[in-house]
Image (cartoon, rainbow, N blue to C red; front, side):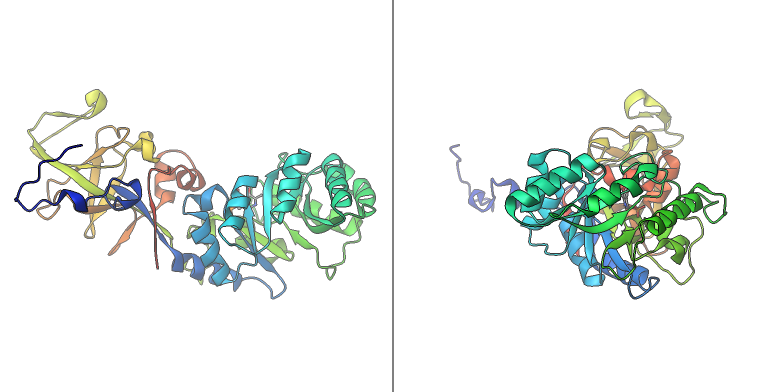
Amino acid sequence: MQIRQTNQGFNFDKYSTFEKDIDPKQRAWIEVKGKAIETNVRQLRSKLSKNCQFMAVVKADGYGHDAKVVSDYAIKGGASQLGVATLKEGIRLRSSGVKKPILILGNLYTKRDLIISLKNNLMPTISSLRECLICNNIGKHFGLKFSLHLKVDTGMSRLGFEFNKFVEQFEKIKSFENISIEGIYSHLSSADEPNSLDPKSITQLQRYKFHQLLKQINFESNCGIKIHLANSAGMLLNKDFHFNMVRVGLSMYGYSPLAKIDKNLSLKPALFLKVKVAFIRIIDQGVRVSYGGKFVSSRETKLAVLSIGYADGVPRNLSGKINVIHNNQLYPQVGSITMDQMMVDITCSNEIKVGSTMILLGSDGDKTISPVDWAKESNTIPWEILCSFKNRLPRVKVD
Ligand SMILES: Cc1ncc(COP(=O)(O)O)c(C=O)c1O
């Protein structure tokens, strides 16, 4: 493009045409407090026995926080293993330099995927004799032992060997010379239910079944195999669920899945969702706002238009149900949340300007808004809120 230069203080050449040069805080972004992850892991580990390891679950891009950043700080806090959901997630961590053992929690069932997993030093979760045989054949072919974890279904009915057949199948698996069983595990379906400590609860039944199974295979606790059952809720319930490793996601990110939590734990949210005010307008009384015009101003109203919407991962069904923080004050969001923007009533503020930063999730002064609050309002769970944030939101690491 031919540009006519003028002498009015604009220097066209100093502005980049590269996407990478756009300020990540230009519109809306997620701040990830690495130190919070590190201290959360340290605190949670203090609840474990010495011989119990901590696997940091960093699937779904570290619950939306950035898996590499989370992994680095979790390892600083003492995590000794990492859990991902997919082959790609594992490879991405390996190629970013992560050296710790990585378990793929999802299922790999083709020879090709299992070889790629081996090549990247990732451990697959094995849920059937068939997959186990493939791994053994791969190990034989390459003249090595293929490291993997066996999963048993104790009540989730998702992945895992069938409970009643496992003991018999384990006898066969033990004779496979080219696999190395690094772990045996199961997954709790309902540990965050309020009745989990009740002896008749699903959670206690799952623990009992898992324990029985270990007895039946004559598992010796000093054999080096990792035995793991607990997610965050299971870990926080009590030590009976810890075995010699726990797999922790949500609470490492700073949120408790349990209504009641140990008073000595003070988990710190690691994620702050921030946004810039892109525009300010004043509307008269009786004016409709946003799609569908369901919100009508009851007085002259000053609106801030924020540059974030459902295409960034803010659920549209939160329209009119959330607040936004600025300078230790809460401001109500009004009208339907749109794809890329939302409106906030800032009538009582004189200090919010175009370009001001507002907080959707996180805290400022004594005001805090958490994904747990959003989850309640939108009838979902905090895990889903965290995992819904799109790549359009840059992740900015802060210490
Ligand atoms: C197999 C498995 N283990 C552990 C976790 C971690 O769970 P949480 O985030 O509740 O700690 C998950 C999460 O969904 C999972 O699927």
